[in-house]
Image 1 (cartoon, rainbow, N blue to C red):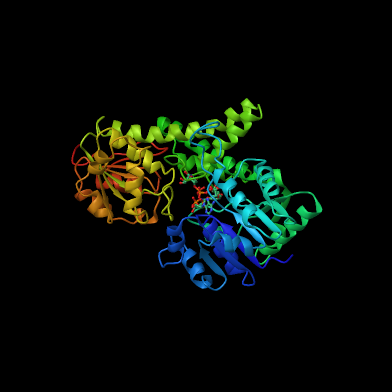
Image 2 (image 1 turned 30 degrees about the vertical axis):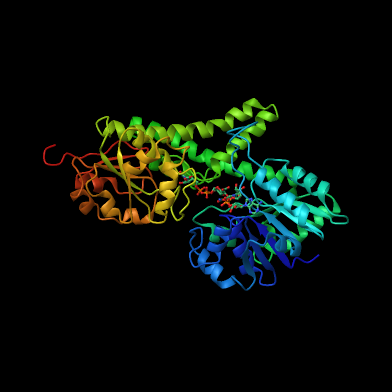
Length: 472
Ligand SMILES: NC(=O)C1=CN([C@@H]2O[C@H](COP(=O)(O)OP(=O)(O)OC[C@H]3O[C@@H](n4cnc5c(N)ncnc54)[C@H](O)[C@@H]3O)[C@@H](O)[C@H]2O)C=CC1
Ligand SMILES: O=C(O)[C@H]1O[C@H](OP(=O)(O)OP(=O)(O)OC[C@H]2O[C@@H](n3ccc(=O)[nH]c3=O)[C@H](O)[C@@H]2O)[C@H](O)[C@@H](O)[C@@H]1O
């Protein structure tokens, strides 16, 4: 079979950008991205896409309504497709067995059941979502138990490695594409067909093929490795703060060893995002189910250290502000979980805001890309507070960093947006309460310069900087 039509179930952070790039690079293939959320589909078809991702809008504009379609007509897209990506969310389970750790596969199962129900011809079904090892077995059982006479399915695992904020570049210049499938003739043929799609722009030597279970596990492993590097460096940042070593100097010296490498060694207020925590918790749960408690507790440490890092940073804010932030105004600069995205899922800024609000602070929040409604939703969600009205009264959301910081006791940098580096801190200082504090949770600012202006500066992985100004 030559792939002529692709359907992607799930128009989210992965489905949208991935299929846009496939459409861009494969003009001979018609790609339809479907979602059960008509609001999301309507946004994909508008001039304001539902997600902010550098370069995405340009790609969508080039392909939309030519060979790229966003639709709620799931039935039609599945019926016509030769190959179907399942790119739905796989959040951590909130209830029942494995609550708080296992991946909730209800959306994947829902997608599989829809495919089984609708498909009238053979399909290659591709797990794009991040799933536990052996998930393909469950999908296949659902498909094969419900298929119509004569319809055959092949399941492939093709995990996605893009990072938000750099998704388009990651997709176009992927380090590798991983495809896992059955060792049977049918499985190998399906692998070839999906490889052919990627070979439109990815060199063949970068396309790795494995068995299905290796592919599924490699995705969890890659995220666990990446997150553990952040916990490694964050653990050492605590040692730096206690000794006078500087974590940036340590990271630079350690990272120069080519066996270690310099990437992903940026100390921070802890990693956020929708996947690191959920995927490692999922790995921990899998290990427990496999009766591998030592392995489970090894990876659990990566999460525990991340919690410790978030707590450490916020405790320090309260401690340095004379042990009370009650009724003090604090500016939170950055609410997204990293720069160049409007995504706030598991953002450390949410944790910082919660602790400060619980301590009675008033927050002025500014983020260049996160919508005010999103910030409000995050901070008034029932899982965040029992008192949404109280939170609403304690926060103000700004669309200008100078207004957000005016009249505050402290500025807290939660996201490493480039624009925060170039702000006029003399002006900011002049409009703040004194003594004026900066807590740089991302290590992006010039701390000596800030101290010279008069700021009391605390950052991660370095001793607090303060230069006596006017004799104080
Ligand atoms: N966000 C990221 O950067 C990355 C995410 N992943 C994985 O990719 C998967 C998807 O993640 P995101 O795109 O971030 O999730 P998302 O939440 O942004 O998008 C998922 C979409 O699937 C839709 N959906 C769920 N069930 C459906 C159904 N039965 N029919 C139609 N639509 C349905 C939802 O309405 C939602 O729009 C997850 O497994 C995640 O772990 C993998 C790599 C990167
Ligand atoms: O499975 C996924 O969802 C994706 O998860 C991460 O991508 P993402 O979460 O989008 O972004 P990252 O750049 O990995 O950042 C995650 C968090 O770690 C933090 N981080 C990152 C790097 C670093 O050195 N220090 C650090 O604190 C970031 O600020 C952010 O809060 C992985 O990098 C992707 O390869 C993977 O596909």
